[in-house]
Length: 203
Image 1 (cartoon, rainbow, N blue to C red):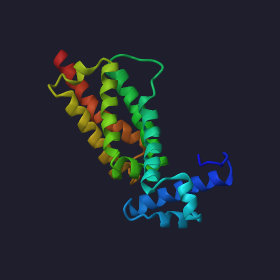
Image 2 (cartoon, one colour):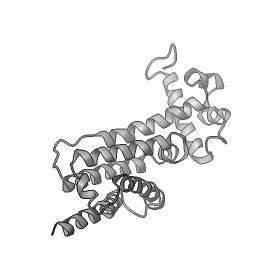
Image 3 (cartoon, helix red, strand yellow):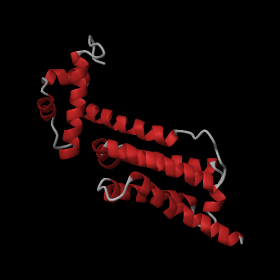
C-alpha cells in the first residue's frame, strides 16, 4: 500500500484501476508494446500516481503474474476431505481440480493470457503443475497402475500438462467445450487408458 493511503480511499481505487487497465493493455498489446504512459492514460491518472504504487512497468506486470499464480495454486493445492486411495480416487479428484482450473481460466481470461502463456513466469507455473500432479499420483498410491504399460510417469505427467495447455487455447478459450466436458475428456484420455491396460494385464 502506498504511504499515506488508506484502504478504500481514492488512492486505493487508483491502484486498482491501474491494475485493471494494465491487464487489458498487456493482454491486447503485449508487455513490450505497452508503455506506462498508455496505462496511466487509460486509467485517467497521472504518472506520479503510478509510481506511488509501482516501481516500474515490470513490477506491475509481476503483480498481475502473482495474482494468476495465487488463484492457480489455490486450486491445485486444495486437499480433498476424503482420500480414496487408488486410481478411481485419483481420477475423480484430478477431474475436479482441472474443472475448477478451467472455470478459473474462463473467469480470468486476460490474466491467464499473461500468467500461463506470455510471461517468463509461465514456465514456473507449468513446472509447478507437473510437480503437483506427480504429488497427487503418489498421494493416491496409484503410480504402479499408471506405469503398468511401461510408460515413464514423468512422460505421462509432462504430456498431460502439454495437452492441457494446448486444449485451453484451442477448445476452452474458443468456447468449443464447456470446462466440465473438457476436464473429463482430458483426464480420461490419459488415465482411463492406463487403468484399462492395468486391468487387462491383471486378468
